Amino acid sequence: MFNDIGLPELAAIIVLGLLVFGPDKLPKVVQDVMRTIRKIREFSESAKQDIRRELGPEFKDFEFEDLNPKTFIRKQLENDDLGLKEIRSGFDLKKEMAEVADAVHGVDTGPDTSGSSSSASGGRVELTKRPASPARDDHPPFDADAT
Image 1 (cartoon, rainbow, N blue to C red):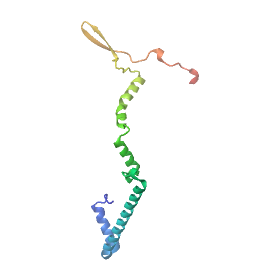
Image 2 (cartoon, rainbow, N blue to C red):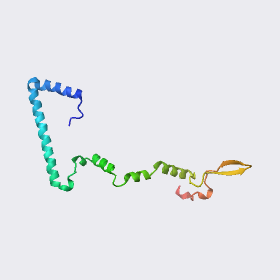
Image 3 (cartoon, rainbow, N blue to C red):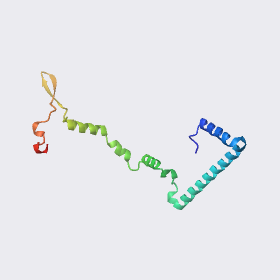
């Protein structure tokens, strides 16, 4: 419950308690606070047990922390009954985006074409680049009235 309270915060609370209640009443106040915290914990534990008993044996492994959406989602993703890791690994988004960008720019990235042609002349291989500009017949029709 008090996991995030450090030594400086605890010292500040003690000093503040001494100033507000005084050294005579401080032990009684601390006892009352501790008794109240114990009663709240007992009440919450009995309420949890009542809820588990009312839900039945199907929910015997039910945890109230699962009601937190972040915890529920994290637990479901770790469980991976749906095969999400396989689906996620099947997508290579960078590769797909590179293919789309190459297609938009008119670069051919097919596995059987390399984008260059080789010609042999006298035992020597020369690599020449093909032009990347599309042919004139590839343009869509132009509608002057639409502009």
